[in-house]
Structures are given as structure tokens and as C-alpha cells.
Amino acid sequence: MATPSADGRRARGDRTRHEVARQAALSATVHGLDGITVGSLAAQTGHSKSGILTVFANREAIQIAAVAEARALYLHHVIEPSLQSAPGRPRLRALLDHWLAYLRERVFPGGCFITTTTVEYGRREGPVADAVRDLAREWLLLLENELVGAGSSTPADDAFRIDAYLRAAHTRFQIFGDETVLDRARRLAWDVIERG
Image (cartoon, rainbow, N blue to C red; front, side, top):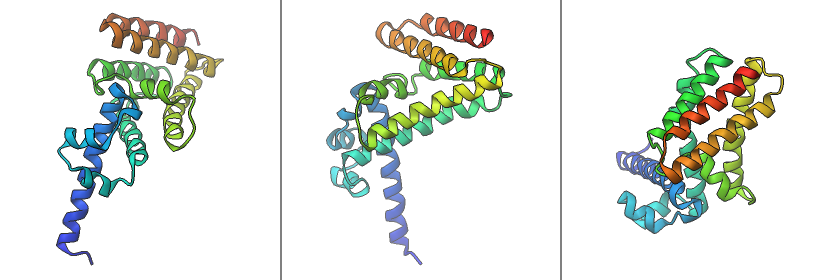
């Protein structure tokens, strides 16, 4: 049986792990996953460098934890609320609405985590690149599956188009700050679904 002091250390370690992973995920959308340093995370979270390195073996472990934390935030803000809608077109509409709200609300200061990190890690190899690719693949497969349910005759192509519109809107929104591009992306993506 664990002692109270051991339980307290475990709880502090879990809290440090979560806070550092959250800050790393947020920072990655502005500075990139490669911009994550133990020193910057210590300054941003108030945890010591040694405390961070006690719960994470190295920077790569922090980067992988950042991807996992970003996935959790993505699930919370985009996917889980959309699952309340019926499969097919209603769920696709909800996914579009929640994805655009996720950008408008600036859940991540640099926009969509998937969009920013796939540009940074798209041509790389290794565990961090694999985690980024898995996250992007999961999103595309979700779109494809819902497009099948909506009756699309070309779900992979339609998912490609929808994703392209959303990524283009993300880029323009980040560069120009013009929210009308988000409405345009929604309209164009919805046209793909309707024609499916």
C-alpha cells in the first residue's frame, strides 16, 4: 500500500505532466513542436526544469505528450460534441460547425494543432512524426466514414476536399484574421457534402 507521501508525489507528478503537456501543445501551434524546450515550459508553467525532467525523460517525450494532449482537446471541442448528432450529414454538419468554433474560440493560440504540426512534421520520421500523422489520419478517416454514411460515392476524395477547404481557411484566418474565410470554408465544404 502506498504511503500518503508517495500518493502526494504521484498526484504532483500527474499534475505536472498534465500542465506541461497542455502548455507544450498550446505552444506548438505558435512555435512548433521543435520550439518546445524544457526551459520555456518551466517559465510558462512555473514548474522547475528538474521537476519537468522527473516526469518526462526527454524533449521527445514532451512532444509526444503534447500531441496526446492536443488530441484530447480536439476530442473535447470538436469530435465529442459532434457525436451527439446522427451519423452522416447531420454529424458532418456538426463536425464542420465545431471545427470552425474551435478556431474562432482560439482553443490553440496558433490555430488548429493538426494543421500546424503536419506542416512541420509531414516529411519526418520517428515517434513524434508518427504521432502527428496518426492524429491527422484519425481526422481524415472520421470524415471519410461520415461521408460514407452520408451516401458519398467518393468519400476519400470528398474528405480530401473538405480537409483542403478547412486547412486553407485556417491558413488565411491565421495570416489575415478575417473570420469570413471560415464561413466560406463551411459553405464550400457543405457543398461537397451535399453533392456527395
